[in-house]
Image 1 (cartoon, rainbow, N blue to C red):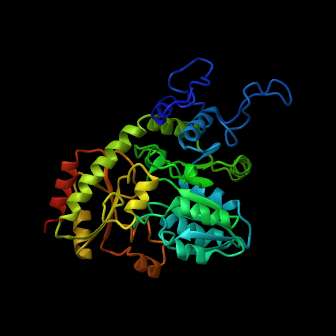
Image 2 (tube, rainbow, N blue to C red):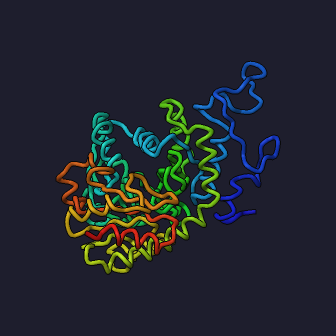
Image 3 (cartoon, rainbow, N blue to C red):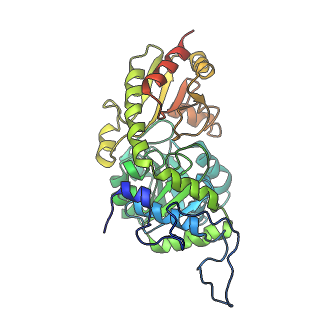
Length: 383
């Protein structure tokens, strides 16, 4: 029987197998190693937790079941660990096209590690399909997207990008952190690989870090497993259990996140201290129609520019309910200052071109009463 995503989030793959004692909450196998009965024979099928662990495997099976089109998923200690293994697939001289508006940690990885390893990286506005086509070279091996992008909320057409990538023998990689499998399924739209920072909405409670690689290619999944075992950035059993617990409420949380975000975005549009609102759920957003065609919602990430840097700093200092912090996707509403936090490692010229200025704030709308979120922003903006 095929179950809905909501059911899979709660039961995982429990309809196929449970642990030996039939625990409703899948156990934490907090062990480094597993014993062997005789040489070459291990009753459990597990050897060493860096390579595989029952708790982590159960989580990986759950992610595979909800990320439509995936044949396998791997869980990592952080989102950056997952992205690092994703890039390790490529060789010196390979050309990769990346969305020009990327999380600063990925920009840092590209600058410090990928280019050192001989990868050739170009940043392109992947929402501009003509610019994307013109950027493709004979040695292009992948296109890497964030959609919505971080922090400017650009929307790329996944189907069209997949067509461009595959027409040139390249892979399409999509970071699906902002929307999660509940709202968007890039593999079903033609992507080859999906990346998640599971620290965010998948876990949903701001209490652990993790990352995922999902793919529809069994051969690629096998290579990723070898790379993960070799580099050692896999997720611990306890953290895997925390993420499994969070995923049980993913559909409920995402519905409330999206509902709250639209209310807050509409309010921000009317405020005299706000000069621009970036949210893909607003009909005036340039990517609104593309996002509506490929996703079941716009998520809960809003960036907005205020009238001057003094206003931005005043809001950051004066919020009371909202927390001034990095990260996103938890129950609590978080306010981030990208220019000195998430995107500090992005070159200044690139930040300025994208609009990541000292007037830009990024809001991860949480699960509180939206009226309380609005009132906190309102009081914080007052002199």
